[in-house]
Structures are given as C-alpha cells and as structure tokens.
Length: 193
Image 1 (cartoon, rainbow, N blue to C red):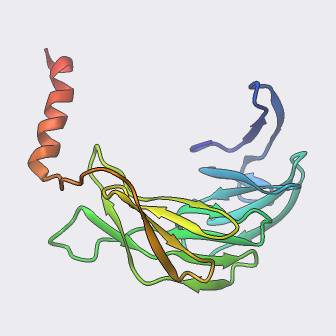
Image 2: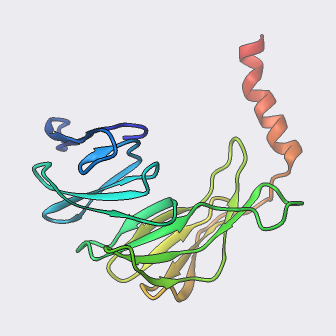
C-alpha cells in the first residue's frame, strides 16, 4: 500500500479479489495510500495522507464517498461498524532540548470529519533510526495505544478518557544517543568490511 495509487484486496490464499483506485486528486483517486481497512462488512476505508482524504469504497471497489480532514494523521484505525475513527495527528516534539521524544493526542472523529473527542497530550515515544513510535488498535469497547519505548499499553474509551494501562512484562532501559550510534555502527560494520 505505501506510496501506492491503487488498493488491491487479496484473500488468505493470496489471490487478488479486487483492485481499485488510480493516481489523481478526484473521487476514487489517490496520491499516496498508506492505510486501508474493512471498517464495515460492506466497505473498505482508504487513507491518503497527501490529500488528507479518507475514501470509502464498497467491497467490489466502487467509490462511495470521501471526507477531507483539516489535519494530517500519523496513525489511524477505525471502529468496526465504520462510524468512528481513532487517529493520532502528526507527532511533535514538546521540548526542543529533547528532540527525539514525540507527543500527540488521540482524536476520535466522525465520518463527516467532526471531532467527537480529544485526549490530553500523549507521549508517543522516541524516534531514533532503530526505534519506533506508537501503534494504535481498536475494538468496539476500547482504543489501545502502545508507545514504542515502554512496556505498557494505554487504553482509552471512545470518549478519549484514559482507562487503566495494560502492563507488558519486560524491563525498560532508556536508550541514549550513544547506544543508538553504537548499534548503527555494529550494523554497518559488515557493509564497510
């Protein structure tokens, strides 16, 4: 999907079921597809961040509707039933002295682009070459947000109120810049030798 102008739906055996979309800025067209999901049993939702547009297609690839949002999403997921989206707007650093730590909010949107709920600021994690930021997943009951550098999963209800975290077993040892540079050097050594 990433940086594609088309969506291909395949079955579990890898057979292509339907392909749809094309390059462009009009209905059913994409400049960059980075996310697609079956948010309702009869619809496929497709996110194009370059156009800030969410397009909805039926399961045969026929275009149904499009919503253009005022903000760019960095992560997106949908409630099954397709009536709400859980999104994380593009992360920002809060303190320029700590350039690798990113923050954002959880925003719940309706399919007309209306904001239904918004959380307080959330620490997403550290962005290093070998690191990662948060992932998001949803169920009908809750939204799960896993920052990339801690061993817990934050839970929110669909009103964006935080629920008790889910602890993940493990030990967190904060990485330093020198740790990352050492690991990158170790990875690059076979290439240089």
